[in-house]
Image 1 (cartoon, each protein chain N blue to C red):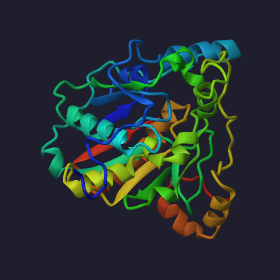
Image 2: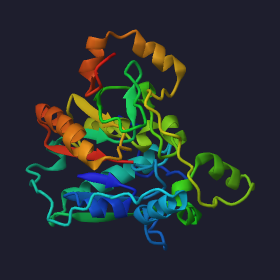
Image 3: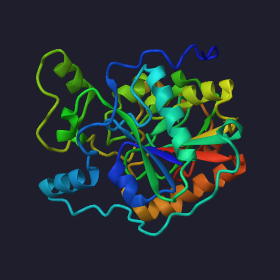
Image 4: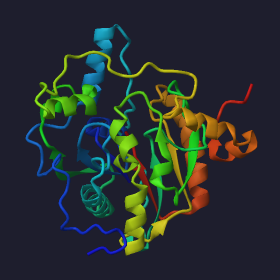
Length: 183
Length: 137
């Protein structure tokens, strides 16, 4: 039992969530976007392709000792902050890790935000991570988490504007682990 | 490490440690008001990702959406259509087309009073939490 959250591993999950793998392959968003752009007469989008082996940093501690920094790309902002624009907004938002989910908002153009606005944990699981920290499953959260609006069409601008901001902010938090939750 | 519900995009970008959650976009770490399901996805995903030893590996979590109809048009999934289908109002499938919101160069507030709340904060204070904004006019 998990007294701090009131959620037990034996609690029923949503009837919309089924255990077991889907018999169908994962949705092919690259192919779907290509077909959509073709139908609209747009030029093909060039997705990031990184065939080389990605950089690797060993995780030096067990999860129960890891301090985690959360980064989400679902367009989250905190009430009182400036909402994202939906046209190549490369800025980031600092979300204090103790922010109640009732204070979180979303601004994005490329996914249905209905559920994220009902429960931000769908795309920015601060409540769940705080509970897991209280229970000792993870070591804790860094004081700050971060968010941005991931619908940035220019990979160059993402790499030269948004990513360096996130790296600089994250390093100052001295996390053991960074958890990315894209949409 | 990163969770994803867009496996092909994540595989192409090739991050060090990935966790695939086979749910419609907007549910990378679970479904709304489902703390037990979100918790399973997070705990099982974090554990599996931490155990990855080969860079670029994506672990597939053994969860899926209640039906697979949405995969016929994954860019068109919406809660409104899902609710209508659940109420017997038709299929969750929809013909292709651009269902995305038009893009805007002005902030898109979730609620209008969010704008009022933000305007009550000084620009200097905003710049500490909204980093990388274009210069104010």
